[in-house]
Image: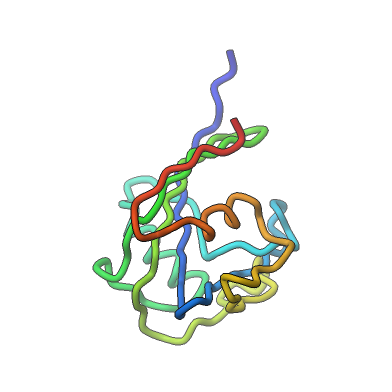
Length: 143
């Protein structure tokens, strides 16, 4: 039996009232043209909140303190060639101006009303954004 490739990732849920920050993927080879959130793999020897802080700086140019992050959900996700454990973190506050720091991978960063999310959104991201973040949640997808 073939062993799957297994990854961990962080997904940042930036909110301003009833609006969520989304980014449109481009030139990545995965779900290009669809909306997602600031996210990335967890590097080896890196704690979940540290990975989220790093990704926020790399992709959106903002600084986040660990106490301004809350893990609100976990998703175990499977696709054709890999398995993922995704940690979803709600961002309570940040410093700096949100800026597209990776225009070669991100066509656009934009705020969307939770009641009017774009149609072309990655499915598991839509699921996560739609969750109640008042309590910790868990989801399995792709099984």
